[in-house]
Image (spheres, rainbow, N blue to C red):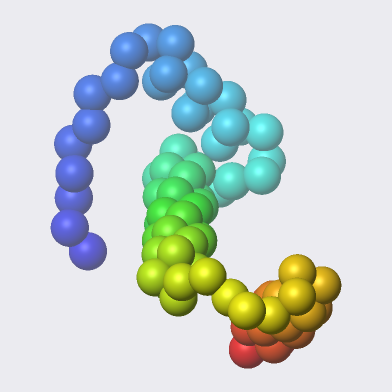
Length: 83
């Protein structure tokens, strides 16, 4: 595992330490690891939403009635959430 040295302002340092002391995390390192994992998950979710928006825009204008388009989108979203 690589080591990174990080300098933080005192209020941030105290925040990290308080999170470690809260019992939710075993150490400051564990807290920072959790933050990075959440950021990675958030970034992946944003990328997925952007890709879906691009797909929608590039698909053009539909001839289907609005209700059918919404029903189809809901089915697709449900299928993707199960995968």
